[in-house]
Length: 262
Ligand SMILES: Nc1ncnc2c1ncn2[C@@H]1O[C@H](COP(=O)(O)OP(=O)(O)OP(=O)(O)O)[C@@H](O)[C@H]1O
Image 1 (cartoon, protein in one colour):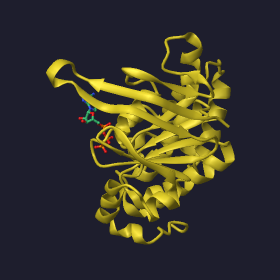
Image 2: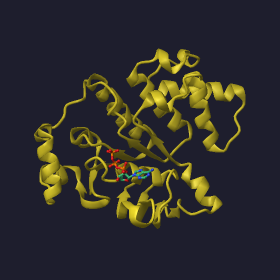
Image 3: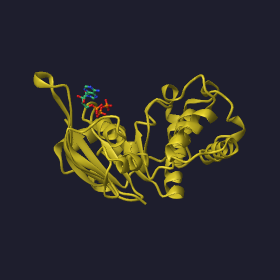
Image 4: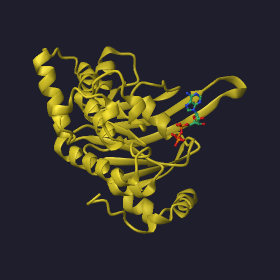
């Protein structure tokens, strides 16, 4: 199991007068085999934290360590280590190429393992991955349009898992889904984490959802960490006024969310 650690990570967009510090000296540790929830209002810097971890954005300063290897460095070892961190995005429809079968999309994820696969090995692995996310492997040749939103999100999870990640970053992955299928995706994540010993950074503005999946929670505001602790401590007895404000805005947080049967 792997640890993902952000050390004083700062990300800026633009320069001069228009410069915007989206992430400001953020420290955050996702402990091995746990789920760490990242919450905060829109624009607080959550997605930027995710994007910098997978190399989609470069930090102005700071380090991101995967088991001690700085994955933001330009070193070849860092590039290899970065493949072990995979991300799933909010909108499964735009994440999947409509012209490709879902099997081919998942097979693309295999490239990140750096290993060569024969056509037969690829087919077998794609079937295995579809099965892992509870999609009928016989449907590997179907296009994304023939699946429901929840199924499509499970397919993007399968594609991320094809890369054999140690760390999975989920950025608002249930936000575009009907409430009725959000629970299915969240339960799948919990199941996969245990089966595959994954370390997870789970980003959501939905505090009820975060509470359901996370062991620890970090709260961000205007690019900074304002609070961190165990999920129960942060979401039932927050010490920061901003966290209290966030909780007030989401009344459902008074009660634990029951998604077991969703
Ligand atoms: N590519 C970019 N270019 C310029 N500014 C950006 C870029 N990406 C993000 N920002 C800015 O960085 C700040 C943090 O944005 P970010 O998307 O990380 O926040 P967020 O908490 O994930 O918000 P949301 O919940 O709405 O996705 C915002 O001020 C945003 O406008």
